[in-house]
Each structure stands twice: as C-alpha cells, then as structure tokens.
Length: 375
Image (tube, rainbow, N blue to C red; front, top):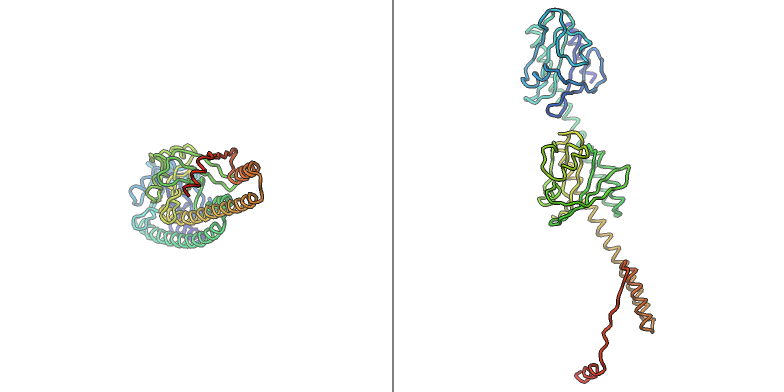
C-alpha cells in the first residue's frame, strides 16, 4: 500500500495531475464498488470501499478493457457523471487505465486534472499503460502470496480443528467446537449440519451459532440440495441462490443468504448428512473454499461417528451392568410374584419404559405328565 501511494504521488508529479488512484474492483460480477489501494492526494483510507454506481466511464472501461480518456464538451466544464467522491475534486480531464493480468480484470488506475483545457498526450497514455501493467502484475503477485499464506494458515487450523473435535466424544461439545471454529476458517453468516442417511425421507437440520444453543428442525428431504449431496456424495457450490431450484435454498434465501457451500459428511463410503455454510453476498465463495469445507466435513464426520460409537458402547455397558444386577437380585428372591414385579421395575428403569407386562403360560397337569412320560 505504501509503495502504491508513493507510485501515485510520483505519477502525479511527473504528469502534473491533481488526482491519481489505484482501485481494485469488487470480486462480484456487476458490482458497483471497489477498494482504494493507492491514492494521491490521500483522501481515503487504504482498503476503503468506494461506490461507483452511475459512473458510466467505469462501466465502459470494464467492458472495453482499453484506456478511456474523458474530456468535457466545453472547455472549463467539469467531467460529467462522476461518482460523489470525485465530484468535489472539480476534475476537467480524466484518464482511466484498466489493470489486467492475462485479460483478467483486477481494477483500474484513474488520473485526473483540474486544469481547464488540459489533456493527455499519446506519450502520457503509453507511459501510464506501462506503469499500469507493472502495478497489475505486482497486485496479482501480492494476491497470490497472500493466498498461499492464507491457505497454509488454514491448513494448520484445519489440522488443529481435527485434533480438537476428534478428541471430543460428547456430541454437544463437538457441535459447539464446530460453531466456534468454522467462522474463523471460512466466511460464514449461517452454519448448519443436516443429518440424513441415504434413502431416508426426512432430515434433521441443526443450525449452529457460537452465541446461542443449537436449533434443530425436522424437515422433508425431497428436492433439497442436502438430499442431492447425500445421494451423490459430491460437494456443491452455489454462487447465487436466486438461480437455484432446490427446495431448501428457497428457505435459505428467505433468511437473507445468497451463496452457499455444501459438503457431504461421510465415513467409509457411508453418508450421514452434510455441513453447509452460507453468506448474504452472492459469489462469496470459490472452488478453493469448497475444497477447504470438504476437509472440514471429513473431520466432522469422523468426530460424529466416534461420538456415536462411544454413546453406543456406554449405553451397552450400562445395560450389561443393570442386567447383571437384576440377575443377582433374582437369584436371591424366593417369592415368584415379588421376583417378577422387581424384574419388571428394574427393566423399566434400564429401558426407559413406562409400562411392562409379563405373560406366563400355565401347563395343565395332564400335559406335563404326558411330556414326562415321552421323555
């Protein structure tokens, strides 16, 4: 940022300009805003987002991807159609140069002069284009380096995330860890886990938040993106939910979300559901984000399966202990009625039953005698 600010100042001095800035376009297609990375004179904070709504010259530049020079029809007039943040500069001549890397649109450089009757020569244009090419290459290199560092950091965080949740056998604590950690790895405004096995018609959708307890809803699976991901075990990236026909996405739009990532929760080829992250901004996620969510989902699936197996083993141990106690009590009881009543009461506690019934079949004496004779 300091290097860009210095470059803007040098360019302003060399060409006698009153305004120079480098603006990086918003990543969303058709967006009408961008972030200032370098400017002279410095009127905005680095990274500050500026509106470009109604700035037709910018739209022309974005479409044609060729330098645009704008001069008023009458000498001494201000350039028309400027966005609000430029109107106060009283600019009479503008030159906009696209920042391109292999035809990939990054943003633009803008130079303005407040001198009436001023203009840009072909030499000025050629010099600025050379500077713009160097700026674009530098910005792309910086972006790639930032991305490499960010992904390396995310990989470390995912590894730590996996160690934490796979060592947690309590399901409620596991879900709380997920709610706390995923927003630090991916842009997340809504986080959900849906539990659905292949072939089931209904699913449990758990909405997670680090500031509130989980909210569970039971809903139909038919026609949903969740059913699709569970059936195919392929992840899903939806850039804009407005174009989606899945039933659950209509509900998600109603909650203010516009883009979503969905990754399957599966272990040993068995699907158990999905994990979903959503954002209110369309085109917020990338294929790289989807790959990251798949790694996270794999860790969550392992942790959920570990918690399930632990719960089953714990329940089995409780049953076996209770049955051992019941057997021991039976051996000490001589009265049949008391023995049966106590057995039913103990089994009811173990199984969580509210009612129990014992049916005894009485063998007539003649049938019992006949059986003994046959033996």
